[in-house]
Structures are given as C-alpha cells and as structure tokens.
Amino acid sequence: MATVHKKLIQAALSSHSPLLGQTVSSIDFPALNVALLAVHRSGSRLVSGFGDVRLQTGDVLLLEGSNDFVREHKDDEGFALLSVLDNSSPVHWNRSILALSLLLALIAAQVRRLHLGPV
Image (cartoon, rainbow, N blue to C red):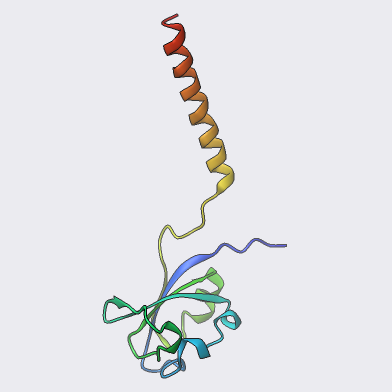
C-alpha cells in the first residue's frame, strides 16, 4: 500500500467556483480527497456555525490533502489560488525517536559525570 503524504493546502475561491453559495456541510470534501480544516473570509477565520457558512468569492479554504489534489486542480478556474503550504508535511516519528534517544544518552552521560566527578 502506497503512503500518502498529507499536506496543508490553501485554496482561494474564484468567481467561477462551483462551490460558491454552497454551505460547508453540503460539500463532500472526502470525495475530493481533502479534509476542510478552516475557512477564512476577509482575513478572519470563520468559527461560529461553521457548517452553515455559505462560501463566497475570495474565501480561502485551508485543506488537508495530498499533492495529487493540487496537481488535479491547479488549472481549475474555480480556484484563484491553490498552493501547498511550506513545511506542512507530517513529522517523521522514526527520526524523532532516534534524536530523543541520543539526547537522553547525552543527558545520562552528563549526570553520571557530575556524580562521579572529572575522570
């Protein structure tokens, strides 16, 4: 099974978007292979009654999805802007565990040195 690397994507709706006028809850985002995380309008994040928000031209959607979504929709006239946010890849935990192990080994060595004195 192939690993899909999720990214944060910002998508600004153009005046040609088929999503205009639809409520957030009426749109099947999973069918688009993305998850909607937030909606920004005029520079402010919309929070109350999120599912009842009717999308307007210029709304910026914060989505979680793969590069495939961006490739499939990069020429879509429904989006005035479509971009992957830098540094939005998930953490590689296997690397974090190695780094944490090395850090703990260094701390243990320093503690031992403090208790035994200089060698």
